[in-house]
Image (cartoon, rainbow, N blue to C red):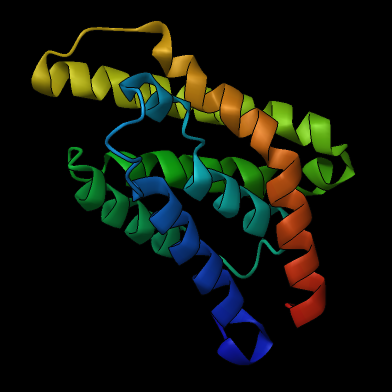
Amino acid sequence: MNPAQGGWLILLTLIGALLLAIVHLPETTPQWLGWLRPAWVAMVVFFWVMELPHRLGLVTVWLFGVLLDVLYADPLGLNGVVLASVTYIAWRFYERLRMYSVLQQGGVIFLLVLGGEVVRLLVQDLAWSRGMTWGVALPALTSFLAWPFVYLLLSRLKSQVRVE
């Protein structure tokens, strides 16, 4: 990432997404509210790869995924593989994804996050014998609902800073 061409903004938004992903809710909030957390990092990665596919690489995204593994205490490499998959799919279809409306892109986000959550749930079930739950669909649903706002915010930041 070249800082002179707005690479600092891409890095800053990824770090902000990491912080939003790990921020704790107050002690007095119900525990189920934490299940509604959107997949911030996946949405930010999806945006930057869709808008500027030449600026974000698989290794960079995989390293952010490994950092997310450390922050979540997940098996090492799990989030890296999920984010690398999101990156590859966005790379593969970025020309088509740009033509979609924001709601259609939100549908793609829903499917990508749902697939990532299912993979995460299966690996965690193998590693720690956790049970399967339907709560796996909640982050995908909230990511779908948050996508228009994330897209709008990142689009405005991209145009103001002139990231190329």
